[in-house]
Image (cartoon, rainbow, N blue to C red; front, side):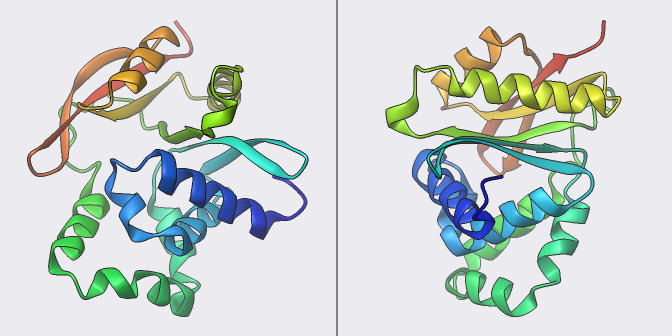
Length: 195
């Protein structure tokens, strides 16, 4: 993480909001995302990796083995969390989608899926094609391998064709389907680290 961690979390959140904009989390806004990425970075069973140049975050990747500790860390800042979610609380449809995310993982199609998961990956548009995504992906794979994981999963929305091509090129293989939100299908990929 760059020396200005708070600024880096906001940059990561802004990258997420601008580049993972088809996902529901982006609609919750930069303040919420900054809290979430700080919690991912600080929780013992998750990681936030960034690539930056001159204090500017060019890309990031996050992963972990469960979101429970991340949610608990977020709850340690109830005022900031409440303020960041205030615009969403007044919209019942958003509350349902927040609950869908909290329930995600309990209804996976098969118990054989790895517990480790790539949670998010984004690269600034002007840094694409320069190997940033590949380097971040390999760093996350190394993190999981060093933590003793043998594989990790990735959930990719059906409509995200470039993401499907990227993960396939990186060695992940389709392993099933899931609906995080009703009516919106995703493909679950698995990247095996140890044969």
